[in-house]
Every structure is written in C-alpha cells, then in structure tokens.
Length: 441
View 1: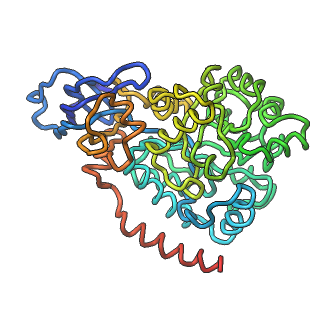
View 2: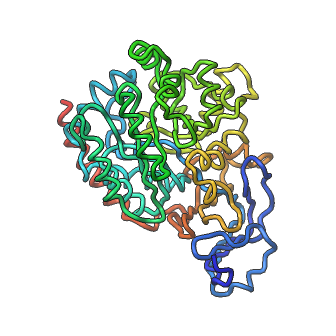
View 3: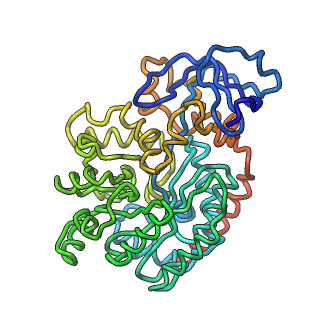
C-alpha cells in the first residue's frame, strides 16, 4: 500500500486484542485504515492528524480480528429447522436430499447465502468457507453483503442439484469460468465425502484444485457409520484411505474429523492437513466429540466451523467457541482442555492458516486487510471484566458485535447491516419456506 494514501478511518479508545494466541488484551489508543488495509495498530492517539477521516470511538468496547467460519453450507439457511432431532443418515436421506432435489437451484442458493451471510456479518464473522452447489451464487451473495469468502463448488459421484452423475468435471470448469472475480472471494472445491466421492474423483478434484493453488474441502470421519462404510469398501479408515488416495496435505481441509484413530491423527499432523471442527453440528446430530485436545497436542492445524444452519441451527461463532471448549472439557473430563485462548485462536489466527489466508487476515497488523470487529462490552452479561478473552468465549454473543469491517468497509455499523435490505431477503425466505413446507405434508 502507498504509505502516502490518506487515512480513511480512525478507531480510538477501548481495548484491543490484535493477535489472539500471541498477544494479550491491551488498552487501545488508535488504529488507522486506508485503502482497505490497516496502517497503524494501537498507536498513541493523535486524531488531529486525520481531520478528514471517519472517527470511530470504541470506548467500552474491544477491537479484535473478525471471526472466521471455516465450514458452512450457506444456502441451507432455507432448510433451517425443517428436520431436527434425527441421526445424520435419516436427516440427509429422508429430508435434506429430497428437498434439495426438488428446490435447490441458482435462486435458492443466492437467497439462502444472502440470509446466511447477513447472519454471519451481524454476529462477527468476516470470512467464511462455503461448500454447496451453484456456488457462483454464493460468491455473488458474499460480495453483495460484503464478506470475504472461500467458495467451494460441490462435487458428488451421484446426481447433484447442478450436475447429473458423472458430469462434475464439466460443472467445475463452468464454475471456474463463471465465478465472480473479486478480491473478496476465492474459488475452491468441495468433495462431499469419501463415501459419495470415489478415489478417482477425489484425486482428480485435488489435482484440479492444486493446479491453481486452490483448496479442496471434504467431510471426513464424521460418523461411525462412515468409518465402517469406508473400511468395508477400501479396507482402510477414512483418513488412511485419503492418504492412500494422495489428497492429504496443506491444500486439503478435512471437515469434522470426529472418529479418528491415533494413527489417523498422526497422518493429519505429518501431512499438515487442516481440520475444520464443527462441535455444535456434531452434538446435534449425535455424531460424537472430535478429539480436539489430541489433535492440538500433535500440532494439527485446527479451525472452527459452524457447519450448515440446517444442522446447527445458527451461524454464531461466539456460541460455537463456547460449545467447542465445553465439549472438549466434558469429552476428556479435563477442565483445562481447550482453553478460551486456544479456541479463540482456532476461530481467528488458526482458521486463517487453514484457509491459506493468514498473510491477509486473522490478526490486526499493519499491512494486513482491515477485517475487524468491535465487540460492545457495555452489557450486563459482560460486566465486570476480569479476563476479556474468557468473556469473549464463555459470555459474549454474536449480538454483542457493534461494528464489523471487511476490506476497510463497514458492513455492520451500530449493530445494523449497511449493505443490503435484510427485511426483503427475510420476506423472500419466508415465502420460499412455505412452498418447501407444503411438499413435506
């Protein structure tokens, strides 16, 4: 960035956590923004230098990096609450897949992703990794709302909403050709699972992704059924199967990783494979508790995700952080498992690394993108404050986010979206839901 660029936004006062995991919460002086990037971070206040800039007073608040949702199916906000309290196989096969077959198209995905992006923005998420179908529409929605996104086009060996069986490669080429070119979005690929994508599909998808330095996401070891099914088909556990297929590595993100052997955890660490942990979805579907403490002890790169709003059922990463920490404690009978500091790092710094964007986001440092949130601590449930990080994980809610900035632009200001007409989007969602509900009767 040209250092002579005029400062556009100046944030002053309050507290700041600039680098979760390696710095402490400190009194905040002044942070400045120009051309979408951070120029100065927590320097002495001298607002008189920037008389033409927008001044933002953060008194009573905490300034920090935006949260990063490493795994979501945004369009599924339109299926939220449609079929709850069911195991994964019945939930998918009896409700989700049939409804997707009847209703999912470009307009469905665009509307659902707008709704999800709005929810994420209002609750503190500045970057999300989405995986579904018709993903050009997800990219358009992210751009319209103003969030940063990794957009993973879905791949199945069976018929998908946007491609017949066996046609996924041509669909991928179409996606790459039509995905909007914008600094906010990065295309990626999303193989649903090792049981719906065979070894040849996984290998081809991995090669296509790595050819252009893109990520490949895949649900892995989510349920005991999956472990048994992959072992029956291939004679190996899911992670061993993926290692044998040749797709593990820094460009691969294994989603869930609930049922892992010691050897599989070693493989994930040795190959520098990223893992997206989705505790609330895993609990709701009774899939199990991922061995987060064991993965961290091996140095596995761990991020936090919500999964889709149809299996969570919200996209509030503050709630997800709390759930992740509490689930790890009860699963290990260890109150020190997955501390507030560790889980906050998973939702910021480490998620940025898993999504290969840590050169741009995840911390507040001069030169990085101005993707940040201002959390209002002037709330009864956040008073008094002994440990701000503990409050962020165990007490704060998405609704405590006062301001959210992406690329130096306020997407949320004083708790309100600045970029879209949310009421009209919710009206359209309710109208579509009435048609979906009619099909279930």
